[in-house]
Image (cartoon, rainbow, N blue to C red):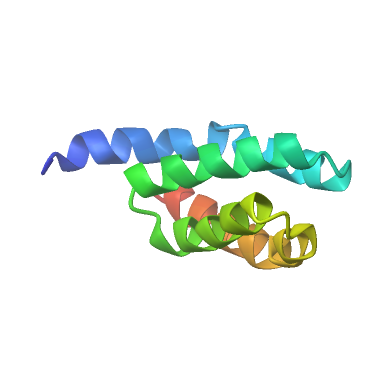
Length: 94
């Protein structure tokens, strides 16, 4: 919407969002329903904040969950973790 201050304010809240931690915990517990919910929610947040690299990976993971392809959904977690850390680190520099 062209409001950089508003975007920065919402970006700064991103690292405090709990959906990434929920996704990691659900994957560790093999709770696929909770993992899908967390991944889908985090994907939406990333889309709204234009965090494209993480959004793209989460879109792949959500599609894998919905296709009952749990192996692929789990296999992409290292890439998601790396993209999440990169985004959170960059945001913390704002």
